[in-house]
Amino acid sequence: MSQTQLTREVARRAFASEFNDATYSFKESDDERAPNYALLPTGERANRVFVVGTLTETEDVGEESEYWRGRVVDPTGTFFVYAGQYQPEAAAVLRDAEPPTYVAIVGKPRTYETDDGTINVSLRPESISVVDENVRDRWVVETAERTLDRIEAFREWEAEQEAPESGSTAPTNEYAQMARERYDSPVENYRRDVIQALESLEDVEATA
Image 1: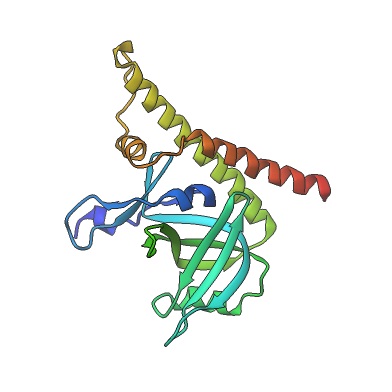
Image 2: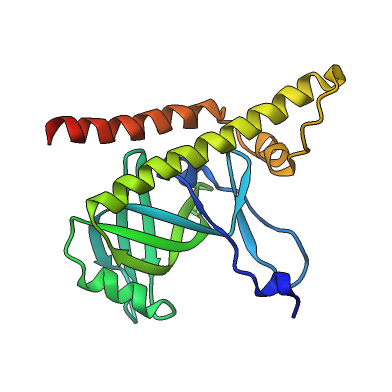
């Protein structure tokens, strides 16, 4: 096994609004065990994500065995998390948690097509931890920074496409190219989400 296969994928930070829009998934190799990626609309691939939010609701939706669904809210929307027998530790946290409580989750994006053709995105957790408000606030700030970095890289790539004769040496950005082909939403929408998320922290501080 090569060194690359041994390396775990970086867990990307994304707000719920962008995560739920990441409906296109792909592999970069025909190998059966090749990682599956969700394409973030801001032009980055994500095999794993790191999210922090408020666990507002849990429910055992399994029929023959326990299969827990958690609803986790951040300032931009909702993540749906599912854990069953193959994620016993994460399922145990969902079973024992008392909402509302802050949780940090590392997991893999999963897409599911409904009967009417809608594609829903959910999170299959590798780990779930109960955390405090400071961890949540720090995650919001750092996720805002990462999202803005991706938007900036996307905009630079777009500018290069529009004026290639300018002599710019901007690197090619294959994931930005894929995102522009696959998604309709302008990346500026996610800048608004970043502002909304940061303002929500200011509102909390103002009322504290």
